[in-house]
Amino acid sequence: MSRAPAGGPGKGRRAGMPTHREERVLPYTAAQIYDLVADIARYPEFLPWTAAARIRSRQPRPDGSEVVEADLVISFKVFRERFTSRVTLRPETHDIHTEYLEGPFRYMRSDWAIADRPGGGCEVRFFVDFEFRNFVLQSLIGLVFDEAMRRVVGAFEARARALYGPGTGA
Image (cartoon, rainbow, N blue to C red; front, side, top):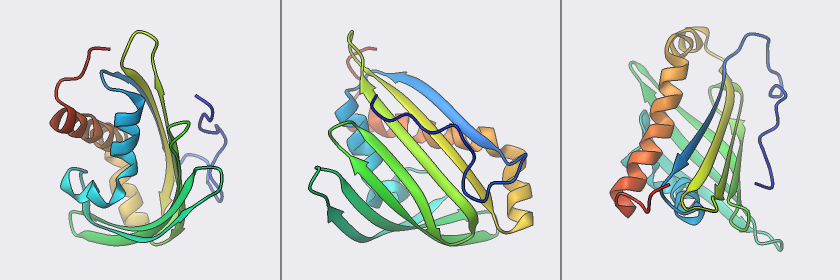
């Protein structure tokens, strides 16, 4: 993988705020999983707590990457918040980097790095680091953060099964 998530804290990050890293081997090609993660507009169809998605802009770059600005509406219990992020899509290397622009967070960033494996299937690396501005919401998510992030990654895996079948075996 050409670009692994950086290990340092996010901009404005305070000590003790949770981060989540996950690696999975899936029985799909890197291109299939990349296409699934890059399809932001479809997130409300399968991603937990995602009530809506809107693509604000798409800007292809000369190097083959694309920068997308998107709004997502997250809904959790009584909270419903919209946030905007800038997503850099790199189809050549199957990397996706997201940075926060506006909304309920102090900061937020995430990285996906997806690579084909020599024996079939692909390796998926996911990293997310964020903090809500709202102390109550941050406290709520803090209680279930790891489980919530596992559910998010699991939702992508379940979506891959729904779209591509059981896979080729990893």
